[in-house]
Length: 241
Image 1 (cartoon, rainbow, N blue to C red):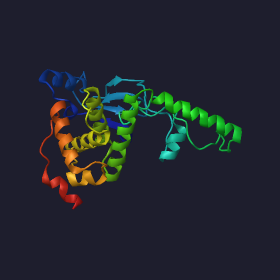
Image 2: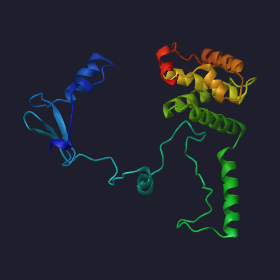
Image 3: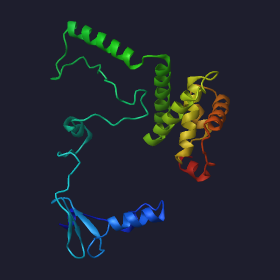
Image 4: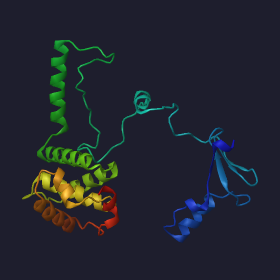
């Protein structure tokens, strides 16, 4: 049973306020003796490890009923789509038609079917980017993804950069500035916010705009959006040099 137990302690409680902390701490204690609670995932019960009181039973397991041992097996067993993300212009909510020209059984399509699928893809792409703003956003997020991949930046930085660019677009900060310039500045700001900064030279090395434009646009975006950017810690640059 010990392998299936997950112990709760008051150290896990969020201390945003003293009152909330006390309330949450009480929820993680046994109502009978005040002892620690543990969850038995095999039997779906929450029990007190001190007095043995069963606090909850028949708990709902909200995870999948299947197990997967690699990403390919996970994709084949999953019956739901990916979560929404700011890294895609439509947040990943639209339909994506693949380019493999094969049916569900892996067989190649006939020439007539391929022509039909090509027309469907064309119309699908038109519906996914219905106006100039969405086309702008799609291009910018593609640039952010390309540069982040080249710099080895994690997904949380890409997500933050996408949010910054969306804010700049909503605040109408793009007139007079290039899409590449604002997207590069957004990525530069996001990397610094996440504590994984890249130097201006590194950013310029993968960008399609000049270093001076990146610096100028970065200062403008930070000022207009009132972004909180802390000075970069020199130690964070050391591992890459």
